[in-house]
Length: 224
Ligand code: CA
Image 1: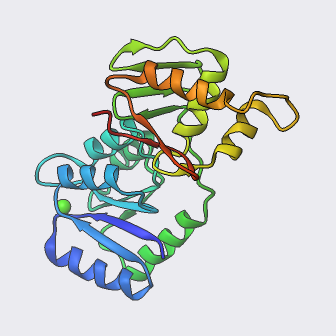
Image 2: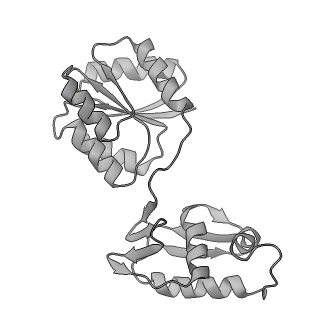
């Protein structure tokens, strides 16, 4: 069941849309201002975000800018009463995926959402942020709170594999095969050596790498 975040300050409209979308089988969380919408979107992996432009505390454009700047790439569908062409263009320029002009029929919204959900999910950003750690795939660089990390090639690969799966357990065997390949003769504790070095380099502000005995490794956002 796809989860939708509905950022809309009009309480009556919000109630109506939540009911209509739930009837179509979506799970819907409403947010009534820009700030809470932004926080919710960064906390949860929503399948689609619908975004009103006229919000009480900030414009939907600023919400969209904030989302993209913080690495949230969920598809965004702008819902706006403004029919000025400039607004539509501006929204799309800022990274919105589609827009719908108010007033609209709930079934039209349903159709637009289905179209967005059918799109393959790609992460266009090579930069991943986990807490204070910023990891840039395209430049092969990583930094913590602006301090750049000096990583050896294998350490880089281990970090890349873990950071791609933050919050998930990665088995030791899988990680070892991704880092060393299957056919390379490697000392059994080689992976542990890299993990230990990496932990030192991530201290004290970076994400933590936990060892779960018998299961594997888990990268967690919190460094304290
Ligand atoms: Ca509004």
